[in-house]
Image 1 (cartoon, helix red, strand yellow):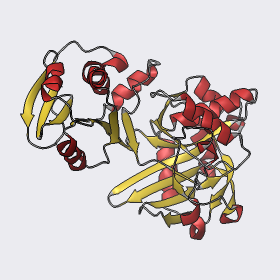
Image 2 (image 1 turned 30 degrees about the horizontal axis):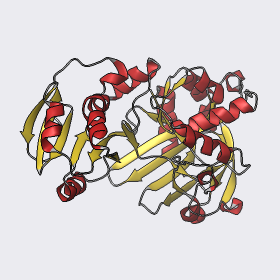
Image 3 (image 1 turned 90 degrees about the vertical axis):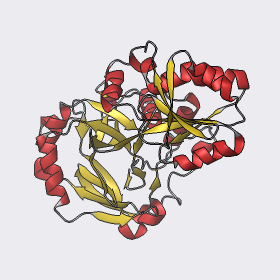
Image 4 (image 1 turned 180 degrees about the vertical axis):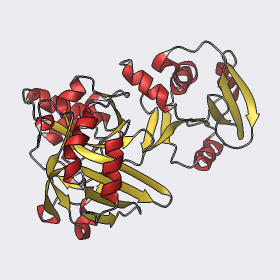
Length: 361
């Protein structure tokens, strides 16, 4: 291949790996885990059973297309090796703070000598070469197709080789944003630093177009009992609180479920710029933090995949309060990442997450 594939200069590169056999996939492929909180947890396997090399077959070096499909949902990305230095140089930008203990646990896991099978999800602007390469790939016979235990159909194709050089060149001009895998990236870069920053080191990533994943929110619930008047008092100065019927998309910052009723809550005060101006940050700074200090309670954070009626029922049972947020606009996430800021933990949730155990190297 041409000069553009030099590992010291390419941002996204073809890679060599082993690919899971379809008949063995149910035992080897599982949802991605990066919430490891201790060094002991780092010893856990990443897939649903110990990795069996015989469950994989060698595949030629290349770029790959990875599709997740379930019902009306379809998510398609290009899998490639992203140069580790591209993260350090700011070509790949994150937007979420990481927890040091989780990074340390992952570093221990990554340096244990076992095979690597995880993927990091990135967002970018997909150009015409990539769009053509994906279209040609999905029209051909896949290398592997299987359905996971949670009913996601997962399919992998090799990008036709004649696209490689042009696709690598096009991908070199894009800016990338981490959608899922901030802890895995931080751990991978720590391992890379310890090894002396080798030019050929990379992180295996699946590159999605900006609209390739669903951007969801995280909701906050404070277990009760909480004092209704105390909550409304915290909202009295900089928020407008209006009765609402059930949960639809909030008109304002968020919907609140308190004392058996839904409210729509909008922020009317001065909003800070950047990450501190996010709905989740405003809620945390002006409502949750003082509420938790006063009550000594903890906030429960759940993704938008959790049914709101379940969370509301929990509030009915213990007298708690629920704050249901909408996800921030993708443009705001990009602006924050470009500015070198990070969002509060559990601000965004990209769905679906790529699975571990499909590629092995």
